[in-house]
Amino acid sequence: MSASAAQALPADDPLLVATGVQRRFGGLVAVDVDHLEVGRGRITALIGPNGAGKTTFFNLLSGFDRADAGQWSFDGQRADGLRAHQIARLGMVRTFQLTKALSRLSVLENMMLAAPAQSGERILTALFHSRWQGREDDVRERAIELLRRFGLLEKAEDYAGTLSGGQRKLLEMARALMAEPKMILLDEPVAGVNPALVESILTHVRALRAQGMTVLFVEHDMDVVMGISDDVVCMALGRVIARGAPAEVAADPAVVDAYLGSRHGG
Amino acid sequence: MIGALSDGIRAGIGIQAAAFALAAVGLNLQFGYAGLLNFGHVAFMLVGAYGTAITVNEGGPLWLGILVGVSASVLLGFVFGLPTLRLRADYLAIVTITAGETLRLIVNSGGQTSLTQGPFGIQNFANDFFAVNPIPNGTYGFGRITFSQDELWVVLVAWGLVALAMVLVSQLVTSPWGRVLRAIREDEDAVRSLGKSPFLYKLQSLILGGVMAALAGMMLAFDQQSVSPGYYLPALTFFVFTVVILGGPGTVYGPIVGAAIFWFILQFTGSFLSHAISSGWIPASVLTSDEVAQVRFMLVGASLMALAIWRPQGIFGKREEVMIDVR
Image (tube, rainbow over all chains, first blue to last red; front, side, top):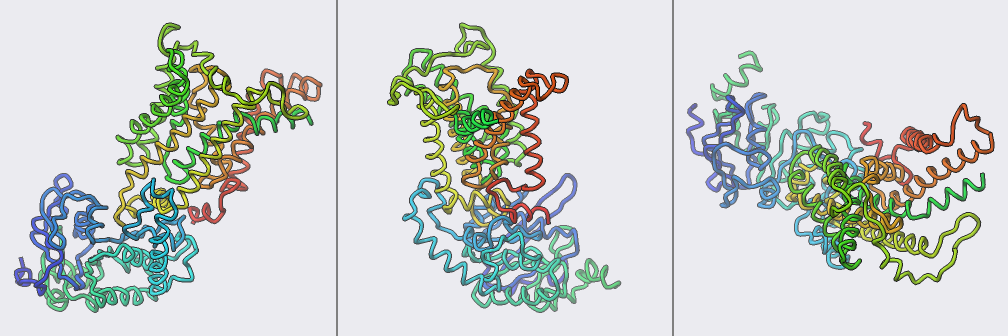
C-alpha cells in the first residue's frame, strides 16, 4: 500500500463509510476494498484502469450486486445487505454506465417517475385521482424546473428513446435528482458522450456540489477527474491503491505504475 | 357476401369477441403495460370456468362458484408470480406456458366420477345465471345478426365486464401506479435505482389481468353451459396475444377492437369460404368445406403478418413507440 493510501482522508464528515468489502467471482477477487470514505458535500472520483473493479464496487454499494463480505453505512445507517430500491430510498441514487433511459416513456414521465412519496403509486390509491393529484402537480413543477436547468425542457414531451447519448446522460442525472438524494453515484457520466457535451455534464456535476450534494463518480479517464474532484480514489485489480487530492494521486508511483504507466508508456 | 358479412359482424360483437376482449384487456395490462411474458393466460381462463362449474356441480350456488373461480385465479397469480417475478422475464414465460398445459391435463385426467369429470367436462352449471336474465323471451337483432334472449344476456354481461375492466385499466395506467408499471416494462433496473421495487407491481398486474381472464373464461363457459378440457389448449393464449397485438399493446382500446376484428375476420372468412365452396365458386379440388376451419386461421395469420409489416404498432399503437426499438 502506498504512502498516500495511508493518509487520512480530508473529509472529517464522511457520508459513506465502507469497510472490508469483497466480491469474488469464482477464484477471481473482483473487489477487495479495505476502507473507503466519501466526504459529505464533496466530489469524490473513483478511478482506475479498465477491469479495476470500479463498476463492480459501485454495484455493491448501490445494492445491484451482493457482496461476499464487508459492511458499509450511509449517513449513519447500515446499508450493506439492503436491496437496490431500499438503498435508493436511503438517499443514495445511482446512474448507469450504459444509460437506462426509459425509452417509451416521455422525458417528463422519466423525471416524474423518480419522485418519492407519491401515494398514487399504490394500486388502490391510484384509483382515487384526488388523493394523488396534488403531489403530482408538485412533482411536475419540480421536474420541469430540473429539465430547464439541464437544458432538456423542450424535449419534455418527447420519448426518452429519441434522445442522443449525451442527452440521456443528462436525463439520468436530472432524474436521479428528482429522487431527492443526499448522494449521487455517477457511473462514467461522460463515457461515450459527444465532446461538446462533456463540459456541460461536468458543469452540472460541479453545480451539484454547489448545492450541497455529495457526488461519487466512476471514471477511467484520469484527465476528466482532475479538474472537478475534491478527492480521488484509485483502484487497481479490485483494491484501493491510492487516495487523496487529485494531484497527489496523479503523482503517486503506485498509480503511475498501475494505470498511467500503462497509458502514457511510463 | 352479405351473409358472410353479417356472420362476421355477429361474431365481432358476440360472446366470443366479448370474452376475448375481456381476457385481452387483462393480458394487455400484463404484457402491454408491465411487459410480462404471460404465456399461460389460458390457465386463468380455465380456473375461472372450472372453479365455477365444479362448485355448482358439487351443489354450491352460482355466486359461490364465481367467487371460487375468481379466488382460484388470484391464487394462480401468486403461484405463477411469487417464484418467478424476482427473476428474469423469461422465467415467467417458462412457468406459465408449462403450468397452463399441466392444468389442462389435470382436469382432463380421471373419469366421469372425478371432480372435473375428466374429458367429459361439466355441463349445465349456469342455469342460475340464465334464471336471473331480465330480457323477455324472443329474438333480438336484425337480418342475420340476431341473438336469443339468453345469448343476448350473456353477451351484454360480458361486454359490461369489458367496459368495467377497460375503465379500471385506463384509470390505473394513467396514474402514478401505471407510470411505474410502464417503466418496469422499459427497464427494471432503472426503476430499482429510483427507489421503487418492481416485484409488487408485477405481481399486482399479473393477478389483476388473471382475474379478468378468469371472468372471460366464465363468460365463455356460461354461454356454452359447458366446460371441457379440449377447449383450453395453449393456442387459446396465443389467440389472446393475437388480439392484443392486433389492437396495439399498451393501448386502452386496442384489446377491445382487436377482439372484435379477430372474430370478425375469423367468422367472415369462414362463412365466405363455405358459401363460395357450396355455390361452386371455389372448386373442391382447391378447397373443401372441411378445410375451411383451418384456412380461416391461415388468413388471420396472413392479416397479422400484413399488420406486422405495415402497421407494427397495431391499430391503436403509436408508430414512434415501435420505431424507438428499431434505432
